Structures are given as C-alpha cells and as structure tokens.
Image (cartoon, rainbow, N blue to C red; front, side):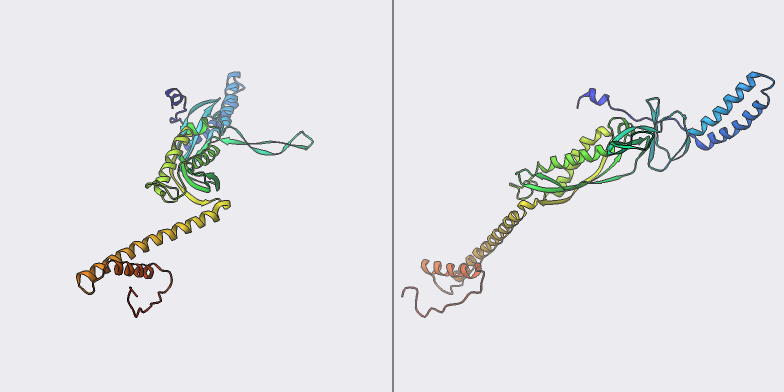
Length: 325
C-alpha cells in the first residue's frame, strides 16, 4: 500500500466535551438571568434583546447533552468536518450543532411513502448511521460458503471472526458501513484462504484445512487484518467453525478416505508381520531348534504371512509327509 493512500486515511483524535452536570448547572442558571433581563426590558431595548438571546441560548444548550456507556464512543461532526472523538463514558455536553447522524445507508427495498395521501410505492429503504459507535467486541459467524480448495475439490467452509473498532474516524468516514464491510471482507478472506490449502491429504507435510488448525487460523487472521485495517477494525481471533466436502462429492470422498484408512491399516499389519517373521526365523536359528534350508524358510514365511495378515481365523493343516513328496 502506497504512502499516499495511507496518508489519505482518517485519523482519530480526542474531541472536546464538557462535563454534563457542570453544563446543566450553567444551563439552569441561565433561566433566571433571562427572566431578570426580561423584567428590565422596559428600561432599555438592549436589555430586552439580551433577554431574548439569553433565553435562546438556554434552549439551544438543551440539545447538546449526550451520554456514553462503557466501550462506546461518539464522533463529533460539525457541518461536515470531523472534530474529534469522545471515548469516555458518562454524561457530557458538546456543541449543539454537532451532527447526530453521519449519513444514510441503503438496507434494501420495500414500501416507501409516495405522497401525502398515504400511498406507497416500492423503493429503496435507508437507515441512518449514528455518530455513536460501539467499541465492544463483536462476533461475526459467516454462512457456510461453497468454494474450491487448492486441488479444485468443492468444499463447504465457515468461520467465526472476533473483531472490534480500534479507530473510530476510519470506521466512520473511510468506509460506508463498517458492519457490512466486515461481513463482506470476512467472507472474501475465507474464500481466499480456502483456495490456498487442500482439504486433506497434503504432500510432504503440507498444511491442510483439516489438519492445520492453528496455521490456517493464523493465516486467516493475517488476511483479515490486512483487509479490515482500512476500516479501523482490529481482529482479535478468527477460526474455522465448519469444514466439509460439498454434498455432490461427499460420498465419493468418504469412500476414498475409507480406502486410505484400509491401506494404512494394511501397511501397519504387513510391517508388523514382516518383523515377526524375521524375529521367528532369527530365534529358530540362534537357538538351533531346527535347521531350515531356503525352500523350508520360504514355505514357513508364506505360512506365517498368511496367518498374520489374514482377515479370518487360520485353519491349520497337518502335513504327515514332507515338503518333497
């Protein structure tokens, strides 16, 4: 990202807001002052003008009060200019001309008024964006997304993203609606991460979606941080919550996994059987129990492998002759 783009970002700074209780005391004191000036208005037109102005000031001050809860902030906007952010919780007073909303955003289509007669038409519905922003931690649970993994297999994937607003100026002014921005960019990041890894069966210790939980989560968090930094959002955690093959290939992949499991089990059985045969031949020779030529060794190895690797109970056959007749 270039320096010019970084410099164009909004930057949060502290705004001024007076203690609300102090301002309320002043506001209450203005009322008797206005009454006294109004009583003296007959002596001088100037006193009458001051009484009117004082009364208007008292009424105007009533529109400057606001409260903030813990982990809540308000961006101060005066005639379109950003004047800072108040992050402290409590009762405050600020310039009454500070805006209460920072714009509107389309939320869909529906019935909107068409005139004074109460008629309606289908149009775009808008919602006001408040100047108060929540600094609390949010959870975004994505829908199950159908994407292709690194090998082109269709899979279903979903994730949970834990995030919070860190820079209120960026969240309020650099994106249209930071809640919607987080949702869209999170789903885009999940799709991007899914295409970088195979579902399973990685080669040469390759990280997979199924087996590399921590590594995939770290990569997803890094991708989200890069995407959401523009909106002043910090990602606390990101993890996959759902991972499965798409329904159209799930049965085929299940058979492949079963075949892989059978092959892996057979490999272990064969390795163990070979070790046991080798041990048996070695101990027979060391203890001089019986002397076996190559042909007898081959026959013994064949019988032992059949017994050890077979899937059914062995049925012994007693040989009353020899191997040569």
